[in-house]
Length: 91
Image (cartoon, rainbow, N blue to C red; front, side, top):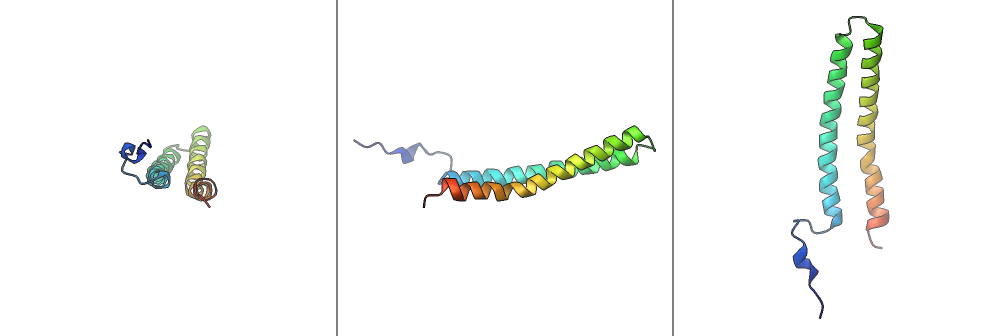
């Protein structure tokens, strides 16, 4: 009378933790690429500002936000691992 639910898993992942791990690694890689491109673009903005105070402030703000985003990308795996260990794993 029991239904075998294991045949419904066509994702290729054995459990939710594997799926989160692969997704997290992809998101981190993608975010690092975006952050590095953003840092390079803000550097170009700074160089091409030609002393204009408004453009320098805009480039500085873009660089600051890019660096904050990069820090968040590197801190987020720690938070996600904590959530996985404390909530998703059974003791």
